[in-house]
Amino acid sequence: MTLPQNFFNRPTLIVAKELLGKYIVRKIGKKEMALMITEVEAYDGLKDKASHASRGKTERNQVMFGEAGYFYVYFTYGMHWMLNVVTGLKNYPAAVLVRGTKEILGPARLTKFLKIDKKLNGKKAEPKTGLWFEDRGVKISDKQISRTPRVGVVYAGLIWSKKKYRFLLK
Image (cartoon, rainbow, N blue to C red; front, side, top):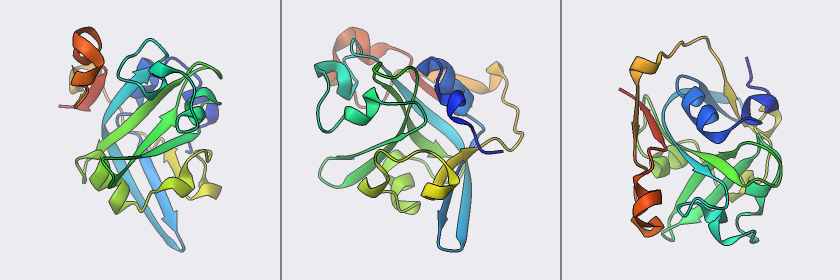
């Protein structure tokens, strides 16, 4: 079942945790791939110093201020695309970064494998865009989930870099 927009229109930390065990599905031409999500990170609001939204709305991050269930895809380190899905209420900038799947570890490897780039930025997570999320019935218990600080956000300062906003399957 394709995850509906209202799945994403909830608090970011809840969406992040509940994306574990869901599938990211990519269709290019007649080829369809589905990978189970095993690692994500949450970026939650203007106060979150690790978030692109912490300095306010810009051309780059404006998608984060939009409706839940849309992709925020950005370029980093001059070489990698990162895939996020917007969460929560409109005008509250929050998103979840998809960091890894059962088969592919690392957000840059994942976007490269799934051929994700800026063309998907601002697109809705639904089959007609060629990229969406599905619930295929995998049940994940709290005991199967680890929470750790996010990766590579030392710049956010001591408080925000230590927040346990990274969720992964043990």
